[in-house]
Length: 407
Ligand code: ADP
Ligand code: MG
Image (tube, rainbow, N blue to C red; front, side, top):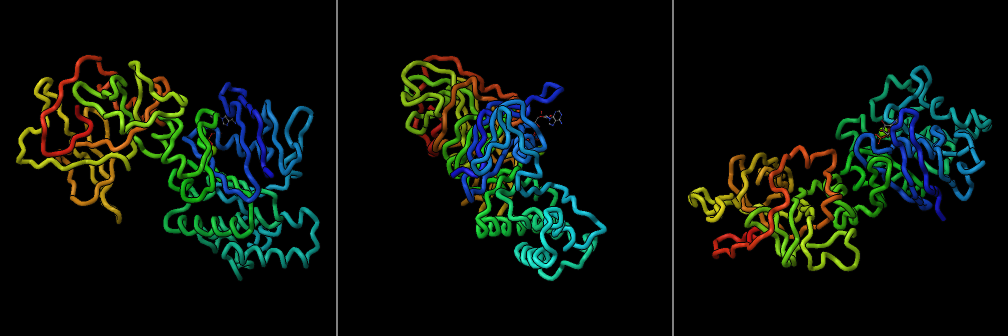
């Protein structure tokens, strides 16, 4: 059964801002769902609608089978039996930890002895064993957020709602609380909806992720789904840092610049094309290339200009603009035809200024109309790659590096 079921939820604020548009969503019993999206995409509006702090203009919300929002139905927040944690922990500074945590039980009239036992047990669950007598001032930020979490779950809510609950914490506290939150919700079988703008956090924590954009759910799926099979160029770019290349699909190849193309066998048609795929006619498209699917081959400096297409003088190669070392290799950005390419590099040591030859292993192709990048990043690129004019493509001479973006 679905713990939380939203149907055709709609909300426009008085100032005309679209909060939610036609949102359908089912959160299953015991599921951990992340709501991910850029700032202003409607995450908080969605969460607060479930909680009852926003009354949506239209649509239905059911909690555990009970309609709490719908035509003629309205259940106020305090009757919805939900636990909520916000970014700023909102705990009373002059009350002890135990009093803060026990507050919902007091409101509900739970007998004192039972409440004390429950508070002790919940403090144990969130890793605050024995700290019930402290005042919040004597706790770290991470511990205060644990107090807020304990207070949210003390009444055994039917779902836990978290709005950027970890976002104000610094690493490594944040990573620690992330792990504990995952373990806790798992063990307790808590249905959870976790709002975040942090992609890594959403992918790491959630059973499924719903990606919001301008009040709509753009895609919902497992973290693996979103990474491997993004439903739109926006999702590819926002979730996976994919670079978006505008181009033309024709004659079995995707031409992304004059003389430069990606062969058809490395392309995958996005869902906008349906079962028929890309077909045979010429199409203006956007290819999304994830950093995982892009190889940057080092070009030896002694090869003066191995990279200039004789006919156009255009560079096939890009130039490394940044190379950030991490435990698993380098995260590299390279400028290529005015686009920023991102790739993960292992096996050689890239430096800013190095020339690289990009090889696209796999690209997902979407209709050009749906190609705005997340947060307008694509537009800021000011790419001149644009839709390349159609025309005969020169065959290439053999060369030392496999260059599969080149015709
Ligand atoms: P998110 O949590 O993803 O950042 P919000 O749900 O807060 O997004 O906002 C969604 C949209 O609704 C934005 O355009 C935002 O400006 C607008 N909005 C949010 N809250 C209000 C409000 N109280 N009054 C008017 N507009 C609002
Ligand atoms: Mg928000």
